[in-house]
Length: 325
Image (tube, rainbow, N blue to C red; front, side, top):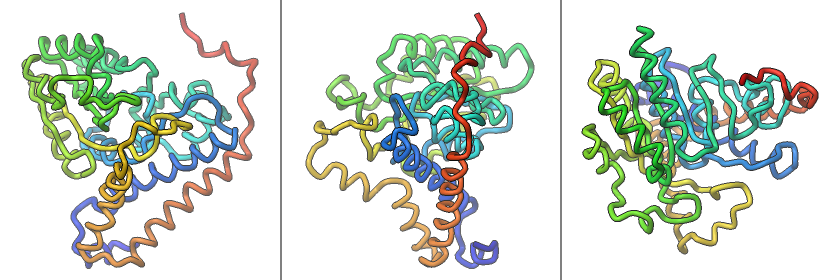
């Protein structure tokens, strides 16, 4: 895909880059699913298929040095931060070459070299860690903003409440991103709260609360950029509620019997990649050009999958290395 072709198609700035990044996440997650079903990856795995526009949009708004903290559904956030596909696959498969030495697996790894400070399987636990990073930023003079992502279910966790209260009271440079996919694991969030517009809660903490279309990477980026720069200017935190859907189960093996008839079909018609394909076509980018982009990214992920097979499994005898107490 040449710069001339993109210009001729009159695509918005960053359009192809955003599509490429989202597609990289989608295809990598599909490869992780394949590896999990084949037994190459073991343990619990949570995929971000259908939610790709949120990490791509938010990370696209940050500056170098800003710190990102995610949930256990964090592969897409790491990739959006710039982690190579092979590094992610190596980590989740427990192979040499993973950013956490193959010790973090699918749900616990970090890659600080790209500004990704990790996942956490304790629901909502990334929020207080990010607040700690934001507090440190105030004293170290780095100007760093901390970004923490969590699901709608985490909004009911006490640690998240305490984090938002402290961040707002102290005007700390942190941005809270709620990836609202409509479900707290297997239960609809609307069945668990009196007010399902979770961004309304921000008012109680004295900070802005914004609900945004989480399937639109550019809408997410615009909202995130404003929140990040507000935090950097010393004006305190923001809560962003990004509305989306996951089009896979909560975990690999989830039978999804809680879904309503037709729900998944509707979600697939409006998921971020499908929507952006339509937008690119409307902007004048022909099917052949889109196919070229897709073939390039698919080749990248397939090569990473092949390379993974050559990497040795991490030696269990090293399990006590790099531990601090």
